[in-house]
Length: 244
Image: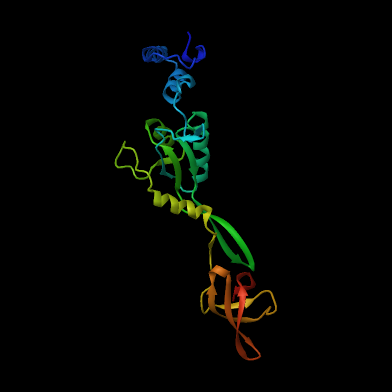
């Protein structure tokens, strides 16, 4: 049986009859061929793609894809399985040819800087444990692919059972993406004003004092250290001190 994929290349001025296309689809469906059905539902024939894709440049003119209504959605997962769900979904997107409907899958993360044992350490932390962000064009097909991915327990923001979810607002998306790397890593500060600290390096090594002020943006603090019987304010890097 000759399918639409075996047809001769289409000349630019040739018009395909809609009736002929419908008959081909009907014939494939009657054969009960699951591959043919999936191809009809998911991917239109390359020969029928007369419209340009998103951001295609033709004669220096950028043409936007007419029906690319992409938005960000929040997917709920089992806690601790966020990265596994991301990997599972990305495999399904590739195997099912959904790259034109599901674009990005993100586990919201941010870098946290902490000072421990006199060392500066950067640790990635999940911003929203148990949640994954998906950028997609929402329709029946993409909705089915995401919610039936192993580890996904559902979409956040669904109005009711069997109803499509509400996308995130642009402001929410910008805030989350900013947390994921546009701004400087979040600083975890273990020091408080009045804490007693010990100097672990530098010219005041082994001296002890009391925290008088903290400057997070500079990663420094001021401590009152007893030198020759007098309290002297000394500025120190976070990594130069530890709590006593």
